[in-house]
Amino acid sequence: MVKAKNPADLLIALPRILGYTPTNSIVVQTFQSRRTAASLRVDLPPDERSSHPTAVADAIIRLISRVPGIDAVLVLIYTDEEWDRPDRLPHAAVVESIVTRMASAGLGIVDAMCCSPGAWASYLDAEHGVIDEQQTSRISTELDAAGAPHDVVGITQGAQPIAPMPPEQRTEVAEAATAITHDVHERERLWEWPEASTLWSDAIESAPCDLPPAAMAALLWSIRDKAVRDCVLMFLAWGADAGDRASVDTQLLQRGVPVPSGSILETFVGDGRTAPDGLRLEGAVRLLRHLVSLAPRPWQLAPLTMLAWFEWARGQGSAAGDYLDEALSIGPGYELARLFEQLMRTGRVPDWIGRSPN
Image 1 (cartoon, helix red, strand yellow):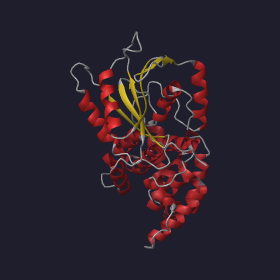
Image 2 (tube, one colour):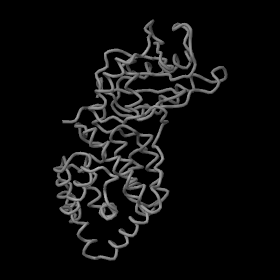
Image 3 (tube, helix red, strand yellow):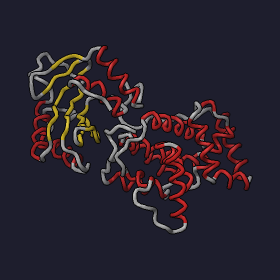
Image 4 (cartoon, helix red, strand yellow):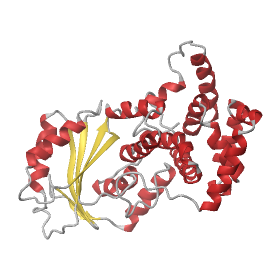
C-alpha cells in the first residue's frame, strides 16, 4: 500500500492502515513476504512495575500464531509518556520479552519502536527522530490513492458507532419498505440480479445522502435475498463483472451443482491474491453505514454483516468484529453472520492483505 523509506513512514501510515489511532497500546504489525498482513493491538499494562512481561509476550504470540503465513513482525509501543533519552525508553522490559518470544518463534524482527506524540525511537538501535509535515504529506497522498480511511486522529480501535438518522427520514424509508413488502411484483423484481445490479450500480456512484427513501428501501430489500446479497458483496468489492460471475455461480448452487474451482465466491473466505480496490471498499462502507442508519432494525442484518466483511477484507479485524457482534445481536441465527464469525475465529486473514489491486 505504501513504500516506507524509513521507520517514520511506517508510523505515519499505520493509524490509517489500522483505521484508528492507537493510544497507550502495544501494536504488532505482521508481514507476509515483506507485505503488511494482520495487525494486533493490546493495551499497555497499566502498571509497568507490577506487570509480567513474559506473560504479555506469551499472550501476544498465541494470538499472532493464529495468522497463517507470517514471517516477520514490527513491534510498536504507543504511549503518552515522554522520554529525555532515546536509550532509556519506557516499557523496555515488555518489548524485550515480546521481541525475544517472536524471534524464538522464528519470526523476523523488522524493528521495535516507541512512539509518543510527535517523536519516535527504536528499542533495537540508536535510531530516533520526529515526524515532520513533509513526510506526512507524502505518505498521506499514497494512502489517499489506496483508499485508506481518513480522519483517524482521535478514533479508537473498532467500528465507529452508527448514529441513526432523524426520525422523519427513518419513517420515510420504513414507509417505502412497507410499500415494497405489499407489492409482489416489486419484491420479485428486486430479487433478480439484473435489476439489483442496476440499482446498486447507481447507488455506489451517488452520494448516499442524495439517494431518495424509495431507493434506500429498494437497496435494503434487495439484500434480504441471500443470492442477491452475495452478488452485491462481490460487486461492491470487485466490480460489475464479479457481480455477474457471482450470479452465475449462485444459480449453480441453488440447483445443487458445485461451483467450479476459482469461483469468485471463494473470495468470501479470503482466497485470492488480488486486493479489492481500496476506494471501492471505502465507498461500500460509506453506503452500507448510511443504509444501517436508516433501516428498520430487522433489515440491518444484511448490511451490518456486509460491513463486517468489507472491514475484514481491508484488514480491519476489530471493526469487523464490532459489526458482526451487532448483527448477531439482532439475528443470532443469521447464517452468513454465523459463517463469518466461525471464519474470523480461526484467525484467517485474506490472502490479498498488503497486496495492490489490479
